[in-house]
Image (cartoon, helix red, strand yellow):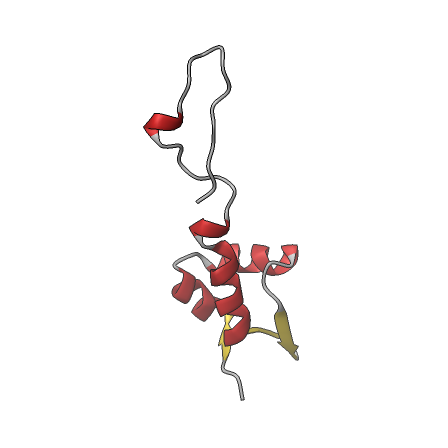
Length: 80
């Protein structure tokens, strides 16, 4: 059986506030498990969120200095 975490516990794991965890749940970024009035999150859902949120999956990454061209040319960006 997979471990279940409360909103507060997920916040502690991710180093974010419980309010931010609730916002992620509302936006569908984390999948909730409701038992009565309790909102729980599975360990698998937390792990999946971490994997999806890592830097190498984000399209925004720093541009190395040697990739910056003159003002008349566009800035070249490479994906991490």
